[in-house]
Length: 212
Ligand code: PRP
Ligand code: ZN
Ligand code: MG
Image 1 (cartoon, rainbow, N blue to C red):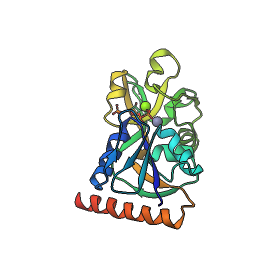
Image 2 (cartoon, rainbow, N blue to C red):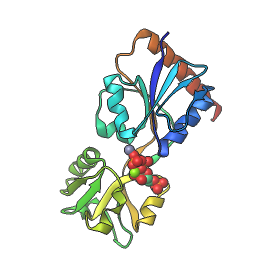
Image 3 (tube, rainbow, N blue to C red):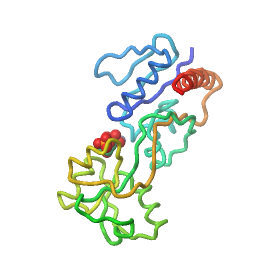
């Protein structure tokens, strides 16, 4: 009996919405609290709860067959996986944040400045396209604190409600890319697994149509 392994963010903006979609698909999770693995009662799915940044790599390697991640992570990591479907939730922006008193007009003001981010590739490509030379500081978390501790003059990070920027004295100055949750799959799924994936896609489509 074949089972599809799906990787979902352990905690964060995507995890709750991802589990909600699974539930709306009529799939019942057996989830022990704090466990990093779970199975479903009524559908051949096994769940792995992981850091979102690691999910595209695990799917490429076949550790997981499927994953739900933000497009932002998918684009940054450049893993060789199939983008199955945009999911329409967890919408956000990858944006430049600067001190709220900075009278920011456009991206050229970042010339010669330093920017802290967890998305060095996306930011680097964007700046290159705009012919702006800036120093990119890659950090993996708590990016919004960087300006106040003197680590960088600006940040480039995910903005959803904007409350993280606000509570760190920053404002959203420029949008680099828009993102939402996407379903990704390993490139070489077996026919049996592809069959289960198609059943899952069928249910997701039904949920999405029901919302229109
Ligand atoms: C992003 C970002 C902020 C938060 C912003 O993190 O790094 O921490 O969301 O959201 P807000 O505008 O609603 O305050 P993300 O969910 O990508 O999680 P991660 O950085 O832990 O991977
Ligand atoms: Zn992350
Ligand atoms: Mg974060």
